Length: 518
Image (cartoon, rainbow, N blue to C red; front, side, top):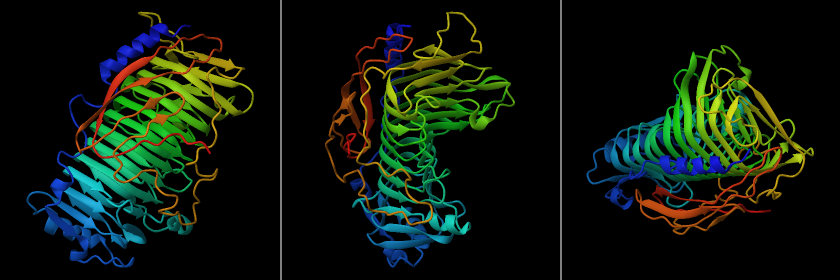
């Protein structure tokens, strides 16, 4: 089948949804950090001691309630450089035009009283949490809980129902559970985040429920579960320049078949090193007919070195097949420009989609996959109940009703355009970080520089983007050509076209990191 018509439709789709963020609505704080410096609420003035032994939780709470909340003209809650222990949960409710500046290391006590979360910010507006010196970090000491099988199990950071806010230049280490969770975020920007977790499931990097307009970029996650996971309900999300390192990779879900609403998600420039997936969409069967949706989204410019799965969609997640009475409707998704290697291209090829036989996937576009296998000498693409264009998908005639089917495409020669990757310089060894030993906080150094104002181009062999950013809440635009590599030529043929489009994002100071070769 030819891809020319699909490519034209894809170009229209990109212009139609603008890919991601709400046009004309900025993400991040509405005022600058300097506007929040009128009052400095230093936790040392409220009982904190940088001795690694005195509980800082009470001091943070006092600094917020006695200083930040009552300040006029903006305030900054400051945790200066030094080492602190936290044993009691911090819940900061409300507040507008304020910042939480973490310049020291906070370590969770293994027997702390956290009730599931170490630090919670709830209902904040025009808010910023950051480190100004690159040393702002939270150490969860999850390895101690895994050794003893008891003790606190707390998320390190949780943001709930916040509006116009940013989180950046922080290091999160070894959470006993999830590292960062955004619930019901609106106009969020999160960037320059370094996450290092244990090599097991249940240690998610960033989980996101986006009410509207969320931009996450320049994040590195080392763990063995989700790198960044989009949960329901979420819409208008742009996720880019993400480095998934010995992790579960990117994900949407898991999602049940009764109340899922996910649309206008754009993931691009995602770099994966020995992960479980490049991207997984995972849903459960149930309901009656089509119930809930994942739709109108783009996933492009993914690169992998030795991943287990590449594109992995499973509507019978965790082998749950009943009740097979309905499913989430998955439609109008684009997957394009995926490169790199899977570990075993026969059992887990670059495309593995297990769609519902009750509610098949429709409007799925797959193009420009230039992937191969580290082991074996062929790759097998598998599509169950996938309608659209490209590879193992089946075209659906106008007015026709989708029916259940299974399709397999075997490719016996290296996919055209494939360039063999090597292990990237930022990659962690094959076992990731250990489960029963401390994970280092500051070594290796974080990938992101403090105060950088110019982006180095990302040169991945298929995409080059450059530009600059400045100012919280401002817009950043590029006209960046996306040049796709030659598509694979198995039992189908394809053509691709050059697509040029404009993107907008905002806030902060950052620079891009290139895909480094060892």
